[in-house]
Amino acid sequence: MQISEKAIARNACISNIEKGLAEILKNKVQRQFVPFAEEIFQGKIAKIWEFLNEMHAAFVMPEVESDIRHILKKWAVPILKYYRLALSPKSIEAPYTELCEELKDGKKLFHLIHYFTKEKIPDNVPNDTLPLLATAFKEGAKLGLPEWWTAEEFSSISALHLNFIKHYLYLMHKHLKDIKENPPKMLMPSFISESMKAADIPQGLFSQLVVKNMAAIKKSKTQSKLLTVKSRACLLAFNNYQVSATYLNERKRMVREDKSRIENKCNTSIK
Image 1 (cartoon, rainbow, N blue to C red):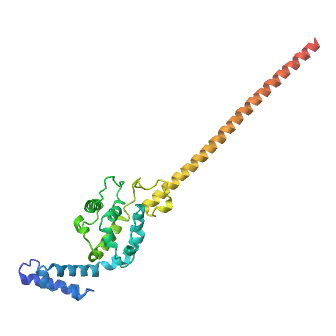
Image 2: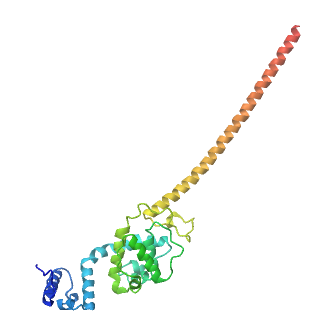
């Protein structure tokens, strides 16, 4: 297929577009969402948006759809649970009708991203949607996540954007799931009790480290108790040894004195 690489004139541009559409139609794309070349050339936004959405659904979403349920239930839900947040059942089960609505305020998206930074959650995290989303996307960019939206755009997402939201979460998981080889020493927010049980912590790579640390602390305490017991036993044994040694020395002294008295009496009798 030959195309005009320097197309400027209308006919040349439309010819290029038609050739591209012909290739696309050979794949599993619904014909009703494919615009005419003239409509694309004229820049009809609604038609182009429908077309891009269909292209996205046909070529990208099959792989996303095969993994998204697992990503939401086994990746996103445990991370959010770590921050005492949750996704509703309708957000983690097909057709994911509440997912867009739950993420658009920025709070859960921020925590999903922040989990993979090496910092504690700062005390001055904004509560308002737009600043929170802006902070989330800024941290996401530092981690290498795609910058698809501004805070204003994301705050107005709807069910029409569901495929793109699922795709974004898919990319987040793919990019971030192995990033915590050297997790932060302390990520626990201040509002989570220090006495939290290990069972309450999601079993991710960082969580395993936390569990191991908790186990190490518990082991350390146990060893400390054992050390204390051993120390006391050693001290007692040493004290007993001192008592025994003192007793033996005293007995030896008494024997020497008795022997000396007996010898003196014998000498006196002989004289």
